[in-house]
Length: 289
Image 1: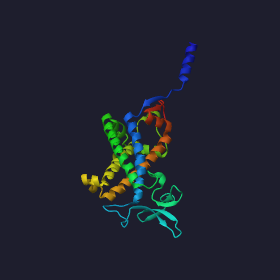
Image 2: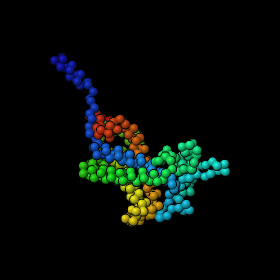
Image 3: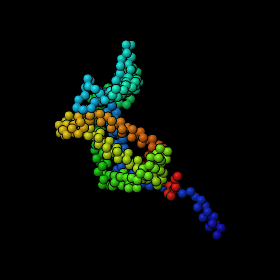
Image 4: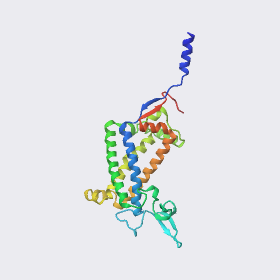
């Protein structure tokens, strides 16, 4: 009897083992990483294209003499030195060394809207930048369609991304906001479901920003304007579409930055494992305050 009691005591004292459970389906993981690769190339090649005319306008027309919503450039002093600036409306911000004026591969300061280390290619080549951009844009569109149709067929979009009625309650939304402000994140079994803010962020990206990027990109193409002339009217002109395209791209960059920070704070090893292998480690029955 003593031996049985001792064995039972030892067994009960043994800490519960973590379990690996399925969190992300193969289609979700594959399209996630293809999307990431495409977005990186599209952003860098897009900045190369932007550098050819570093100004944004609103409406049908945009040229050097027209008032710009955003302009990035450089002013040359009497001694030949360059002062970079970013102008938003009537507000001008000095940005020497980063925007407007930065060093080239030889170390010389040259006029360039975005520096060479964030453009693809790193040297000035509008033609090559456009080829990179258009090629990966079609891969991006095809991959996104696969994700949409696969997510609808599997129920992923409805099951994992649509907020539940309980999550739509004001008290639940307020709790999610407060938890994020306090950097308090769910763990183990609680982390297997997205909270309200996560769902809204993901739906905003895949349902608003990414489609806006695609449609405004098509609007800037003269060939697509001939096939789908209503696109120009939808966005109020090709220049407006270019501005919306730029804004959407920057919002996607902001989302990626916040997403990476959240992954690091929530536990990067577990989060990356779940998006690579699909397996997420949990401690069954764990309580978190």
